[in-house]
Image 1: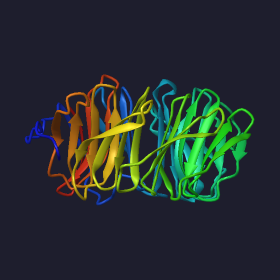
Image 2 (image 1 turned 30 degrees about the vertical axis):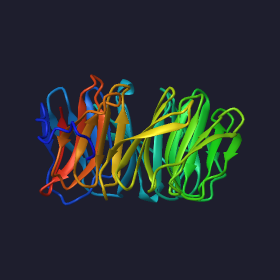
Image 3 (image 1 turned 120 degrees about the horizontal axis):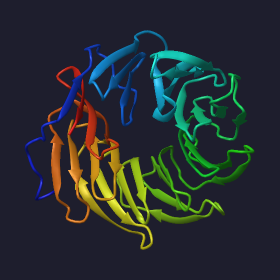
Image 4 (image 1 turned 180 degrees about the vertical axis):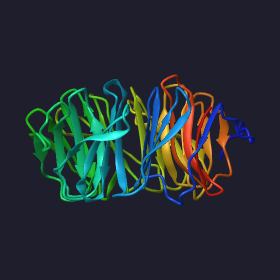
Length: 334
């Protein structure tokens, strides 16, 4: 990693959990204040952070590719190959409802509020569901994408979707109307941010585009990455971006200027989060770093792993990560 102040020794976790050795890859995961839910293909695990217990909810079935957690309602939702969506109770550790609407893998999920769930699939459709209804079919089906709907972001009553067709679309989630089609990228879209004022998209074409959600106009094209854009994080006027060749950049959007925060050759950034004061990211080299954007100082959190699946911050702002090392999948909170 390119930083003169990097700390070589990895940090010791305060909480650590090792999952059963099953030879499976982590395909989805979410963390809340009380629970961590991890999908390893068809196998589903829940960690209770209060008593540090690990529960296996299922071991067979369709591989799970998306997951959304809602602790206030004591539930989480999984999306699998074949188009299945299942709502699980965190209390009983069992399925309380199955939803039918997609005809292919559910690739993206977002719980908007206490009553609204949105899903995007490889069947190129978006489904809007009522969480409180007894009806197991979608309230609305949004059509317009021509390939997999990879990512969904909601702010207010506006949904932004993006996918493998290279387009992003802006929708009214109350009516299902498509308000804008955002065209300009020349490759698959892999990363998306939306804060109500700006939409930011990252693509296989190595560029980042900033859009006006009201008009659908492209406000800026940011160039400087040399690989596909794998991750984006937007906070006010500051954008953090990462790519498939190990570069992490920070941009001032009002000035359309950026600077490199980290570089690690041939190490695709697989997960990234930012909380305003710290940037936490992990890569395919099996390393994870905390970077302080103003000073440029960085700290090695984990090194020498086989792969980093997911990084994040807990509700109490503690770094956590899920990674593979020596054949075992670990979840550490620092």
